Amino acid sequence: MADSTSLINRMVRAAKLEISLYEEVEADQKATMPALWLVIIASIAAGIGTGIAGIMSGEGPMFFVWGLLGGLAVALIGWLAWAGITYLLGTTVLKGPNTSSTWGELLRTIGFAQSPGVFKILSFIPFVGGVISFAASIWMLIAVVIGVRQALDVSTGRAIAVCIVGWLVYFLLGLLLAFLLGIRLFG
Image (cartoon, rainbow, N blue to C red):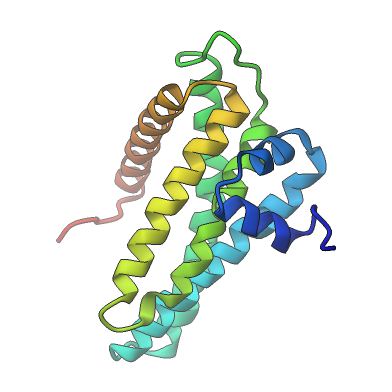
């Protein structure tokens, strides 16, 4: 029988949206490093898919390398920031009557919710790659809501609200950072 705490086993269970997995990793403080590895694996898979698509469209190999490295950095920073924002919102402004959580619990559940992201490696496939990538993103969002719900001990509706408000805050902070760094987003 496969070890129920192996990374692959937990990734499959997370992708299956098994509530028991999210409860398990919420409580398992040793699951923070595996959650980190999962974020890295999903990011690399997405980067490979995007890189192959870029090469197929005539971009050079450096597009692939820089896209992979940049995507990995953004994924790691995003994971830490998203968990922090979700923690702050979910334990203060939008907390439920039974909410008791830590940043680490959210790091673990949100990290494991990235499991469906490994399918983004297929994003280079002509005609269906974009659909696969979009479906994986929606799948990941659903997994994040489940992970947030379990970590914060709130209703699904409240978890959705925490995720929406958290994403808006995250997006606005990203825009502010881009503005402060002088990065041109449009045109």
